[in-house]
Length: 100
Image 1 (tube, rainbow, N blue to C red):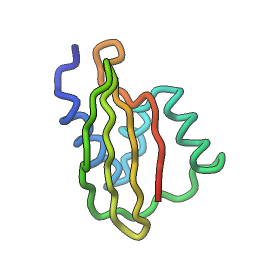
Image 2 (cartoon, one colour):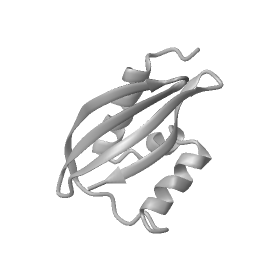
Image 3 (cartoon, rainbow, N blue to C red):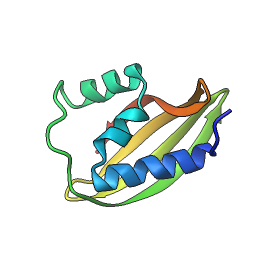
């Protein structure tokens, strides 16, 4: 079982997104989630947008999956739909989709 709650893991990840801490962001992604992110970005990640805030809009639980909808605001606003799961004792993003 992870040392922190899934909500705290999400908050820490979102803070990493705001400051552009790519190492932290990547550490939270499973290979499958990274593949989904790359597919959403059209094969290339491009420059990270300058973000100023985030708002967790919902948290749904389906079995072992925790699905969060998070609105990011900045020079490019988007909604992230991230599925988090306990993977070997750590919270990881197992699926990720971006919506405008």
